[in-house]
Image (cartoon, rainbow, N blue to C red; front, side):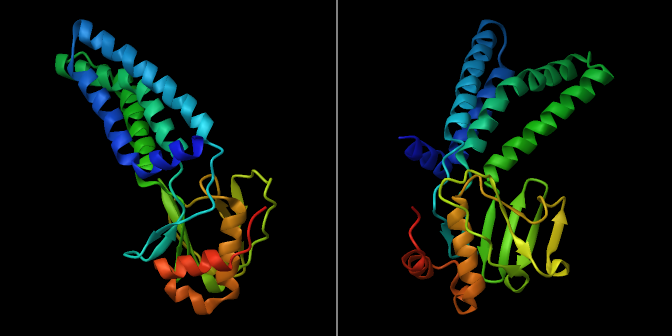
Length: 240
């Protein structure tokens, strides 16, 4: 049940986030009794979303999303980030509301303005993070990891096959062994160096797939195709 909820949230993350943003926008545009009811409803929705974020945080499927148009195999965006973003909209809503009302009335102080702008900016960052579903992507040219503020791209030639963790290992990061750091391309503020995010994909599966393409360069060019993904799944050892 939790797995299905997580998968559905990932698949429809944009709709879920838009509904959350719509609630904030409608609440900010209303006044009086309707505004009060909206605040309470948004608080309850946010609380429920934060609880769901904790519940689904441990769901990490042994699967990639196939994107032939890129081409790439992409780790699915984690459902917990979507629920966390919706949950964060509740505490952020009063700051958005206060900023709009104070700006219209001309009573916005410098301190309140800076504080509310920081809250709104952080809200945009959190929603963007959930909207884009950042994570690990395997391309024919190498392994790319993105997050809200930057990315790191390591070519296959600079990677060693990672050690496959046990099936009961619950770590949220997988250590990637890079033999030639000078070949790694960094943009913005990159993710943690040498670590691959594994909170949205089974770490053993991720390690096995990377190791497969490190050891079998002849298959790298087909990464991103459904045919190659089916071949990959058939060839990988089963996880216990």
